[in-house]
Image 1 (tube, each protein chain N blue to C red):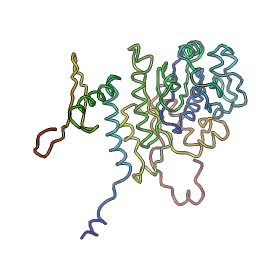
Image 2 (cartoon, each protein chain N blue to C red):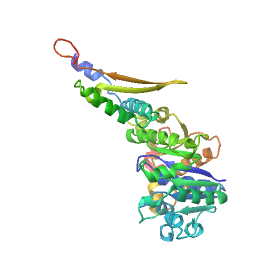
Image 3 (cartoon, each protein chain N blue to C red):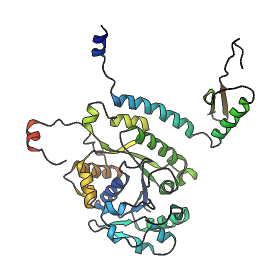
Image 4 (cartoon, chains in turn green, purple):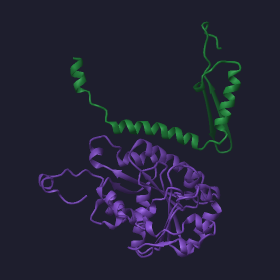
Length: 89
Length: 272
């Protein structure tokens, strides 16, 4: 049975893998394109401040700038680790 | 007023210089007064591809620094009327290339020529940014391959923000996608991105598709831009690209896989 499944399974063509990967990375790049130049620094410094109180990973912080017509919203998302009792920190 | 076209890509080795040489030559062959400028200071190669490497006396940096007049540095193409080459400096460092200097050169050329083609160096540093800064149009040379497509997207970001048109809030640089080294047989077998894939990801207008071709190496070996080889698929594809740049509606060729018949397989079936 396993063998039959294996034989029936079509190998994913490498070009479609390439396309999927590119779509993700390009979307990410374009998100960063419109950001002001200070965003990476801001993200780094915010992370440092948070780390004075809570140990979080580099990728636990997500910062986003959305622009509407007349205002911009700075969105900050931090995933805090939980201890054994389920409390943050 | 000349139209300034930058040939750029981000990634190296995708065919910028080959394309700049072929497109500039194609524009001149169609009767447009054209000059092609090498911006790759320190690593000039346009002169080799254009076949005028032994006639270089002065270069772009000499002109910018006032050591030579523009007319002394411009090289008249031997084969094509209406075509001149302005080589890059081979020895100086890239910082000698200044925005003010480049602007002055382009302004002067702009009065005499119909088209100014700027051959950008690879990368996104000083030289590449200067090559695109004054552009009206950009040809983004892309191979159907992940790193080239990603780098092309980075370049599109720079074209939208780091050009004179962007800084002055003028109409944006017109972006054209030129796909090179396209291999329809590998596309058919599913191992190469299709032209629709690349176009969809980069979301800009396709100006040309150049198939992987033996004619390209043959052309650069001889120092004759491939557009002169009109028996070849690549030569014809570049000629089509030039027509589209001039606003003509030309159908796409060389994107479908032609399976070779028995006869053409036995007897070679023409040049590629």
